[in-house]
Image (cartoon, rainbow, N blue to C red; front, side, top):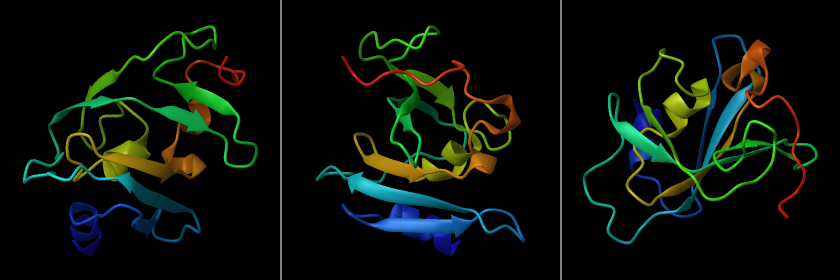
Length: 135
């Protein structure tokens, strides 16, 4: 509950982290990079339909490996959104999103530092390759 409260009360520049699993040394880090002036009481919760724009970067090289604006061939093609229902355990999106997007308000921006166990896991990156930098 403390973790959820910290997410609900996040401010610009704030950071929240949580250990992954009982005996794991991996940590999910959630950095709030922008909160609109009028965030209001409506926050993302389980069962909500969310619209997300994202870009996935490798932590060590900052190479782009996935994103809502990357096609199946690994090329950038515009500014598209991904829609999914926030349901823990349904695997509609990376598991880190099921935790990291909870409590967000419309227009808020967060940067998630995702350990492999909460990313795409053994299945790998859906689009299957590292993409080149923005044109």
